[in-house]
Image 1 (spheres, rainbow, N blue to C red):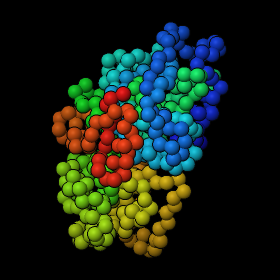
Image 2: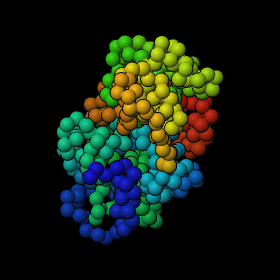
Image 3: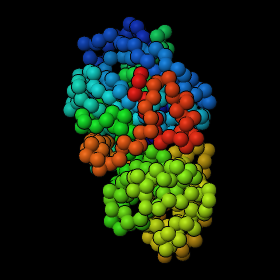
Amino acid sequence: MKEGPRSLVKRQRDEIIEHKVGDSNPVPNGLSKEKVMPQKIRASIAYGVGKGFSKPEELILDDPIKAEVLVNIEASGLCHSDLHLVEDDDKMFEFPAVLGHEVAGTVEAVGPEVMGIKPGDHVVATLEQICGHCDKCMGGKAHSCRHQEECVRQPGEPPRLQFPDGRPITQVLGIGGFASKSLIHQNQLAVVNNQVDMAEAACIGCATITGFGAAKNSAKVQPGDLVAVIGTGGIGLNVISGARVCGARTIIAIDVFDNKLEFAKKFGATHVVNAKKEDPVEAVRRITGGGVDKSFEAIGFTETMKQCWDMLAQGGTAYCIGLAKPDATISLEIDPINLLFMQRGFKGVWMGATNPKHDIPYYADLAVDGRLNMHDIVTQRIRLDQITEAYEQLMRGEVIRSVITEF
């Protein structure tokens, strides 16, 4: 059975608690014996649910082994999902932990089994953990990999990250990007155009592959399609960009902040709807003359997921992208006869059905060429000690993405 992201991250923590910095255990089979000294890094730590993010602290990062890559992080985006994970006790991982998964940087060193990545390369991380050899990976569905555990250290191996006194710390999703450096498995990295701005590249690793990928890979938006997007944060704006590049005729952006709706026009929205001022379902039906071919929910609220369903035209499909709270449930009252004749669909999307090694470099090239608007995604560049303030701005709707560029 495939190990889901929640159980995988928790198991990672359970497996490392026996190890300490400076342990005299022999090097396990398969590890490089040409070890460099573990190095000190700076990181912001989450100590528990509702405790937010600490000011920068010193941690110890091991050297790369096997297929690991040591990345000097130059940009780390503040995705809303990381805030969600420290505010809700969903048992996905153990505290203390280093979060952050939108990462771009330069390769500093590689483990002995790394192929296709070398020191000096510019890389972007993805939280997709893929083995590269299971039937899903070989069949072009890496986002459904059956052996995600191969991207983390195994039982008997020392932890990647720990406190100076030897206590291990969880590196969430194998990245731990709210830090100056990180050890990341090669399968969670893609080499990108060295001309792409690092802050913009960091956002490509999550917001773009999730949003743009939902439009391009999951929904396969076609020229002439009618599209609605609920939520115009980093992911929603990338859905709009993807729908525009794919040739959608009408793209309706829906949010509750007028400034964000106006901003969505820069990414290709042809119409905007403020859900505080009018019913979004009625507005979409009025604008389109009956409904949309594809609707996207990019927030994670059950109410807006239902709205996505209700605004579909015959033959349309609703795509749910947003990360909901752990205890959230959704129920739809569907007339079976209506379902048969209306031919509508309701589908969840994980990471934009992305093939990271292919899609991330492609999106980076689009950004460099000016065909993908990443410049306006990055609202501000901040220091590592400004995470809390930047998330407060995000919740007030004042920014799209804050990106750490000073560590």
